[in-house]
Image (cartoon, rainbow, N blue to C red; front, side):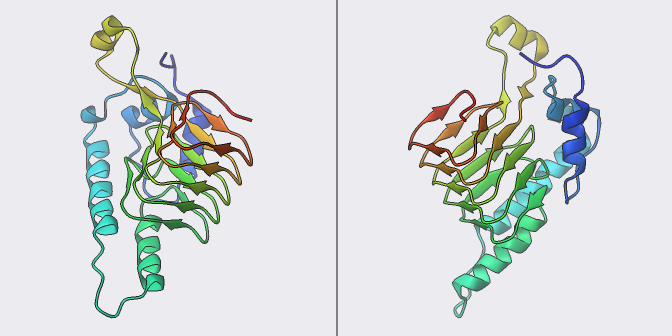
Length: 199
């Protein structure tokens, strides 16, 4: 069920973002868990397009003849730093990588993400320090009402935040659904669908 009013705490969290944020009424509704429609905001559409451009650069980075792995990682980190709300030190995210907004994703130190990780960050996503994320993991903050009548009337989706605390290992092809908190040091088995908090 969508929220009924804006969430000042969520808005304050995203104000800590180290990159540009498409602040507008629809964006504040989105990060607060209210029904929203990004299509109603030119600012949100422009931001989304810019993130898509940066992801193309990140995922299709040319590899010159005399490149090194160190060079590729450094270049990718420079691109990530232009997208993510927070990017800790010693972060390594393999390509291809996908996110929607970037500014709503906060990544701690020493995080490693394998290939094909997708973060649908309509609400804030916080990833703690020293987290390992396997290939093909989907972190999904967005959802829709299960009642088809309400879905038709609202015509929009809503989102809940996700938190992955320090020292977690998220196995291959795990799906993390909206509103989940994964407690410190937790291991999530390959292929799991996480629908509730895990301590």
